[in-house]
Length: 297
Ligand code: ADP
Ligand code: MG
Image (tube, rainbow, N blue to C red):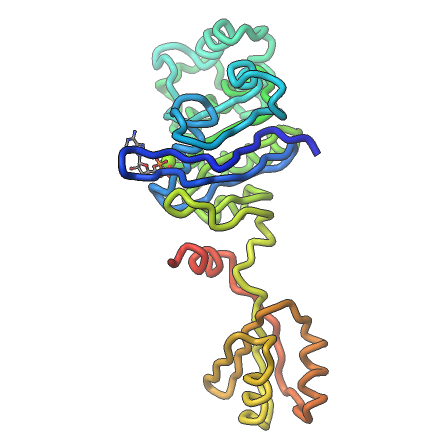
């Protein structure tokens, strides 16, 4: 694995407020990372620090294994952390020509990147005639002009209509599939769930969880069961340390797991106690329920 960015106990204080608190995580090449957290949890501040626009208070971060200066490393980074800022009366193409000049990128990249974001047929339209979603896609084209190793986006779908949101999410997935590593900040769980492979969950600047999105488990799930000997079943489950909580409602017993257990193992365990189940389902809390559980305290 190739490390793109490593962050080590990064902290940012604004006076008495700790916006980012001893945050550590690593970004490996080829993945799509989401920094997920409610408003004010320190997402933008974290992005600002690694992009050298906000000064850290303590801790460290290192780009590309630390072999290059941050200044040189950022030449291989494409980022959109503010609202797209183009000249309204210039065409999309002319705006990108300016960016090429500033970044020292050959002009033939313009057509290539406009095609990536689906704006090639609108390149001669003035920027001010673009919808919000098109403006955001043009910003992404602009950030991609120098073929960055990583694309960083802060709340990429904020303010867009449902169609615009869908287009941007599809575009991010497509850019990732083409091999660009992505780091995006979002307060939307379903955005991270739909777009990202990995997630760092932040609350008040602190990391609550980091890992793969599909392993973002605050629990090992639970069993729902029915049987004729309800009381006996509850007693058996309450005496088994594998379960942290047993609930009973409308003849349905819910047993919450402390550790992993498959349904067939559970079924045998009950059968060995002389309990025959008439209904058994294993379920996991949805990602949303897990996220709420993680950020509850
Ligand atoms: P997020 O992007 O997750 O919404 P931010 O990183 O923007 O969160 O902000 C984290 C916290 O730091 C918030 O409480 C915010 O008010 C505070 N903050 C951000 N920037 C500044 C600043 N320049 N001066 C003072 N406080 C700030
Ligand atoms: Mg923010």
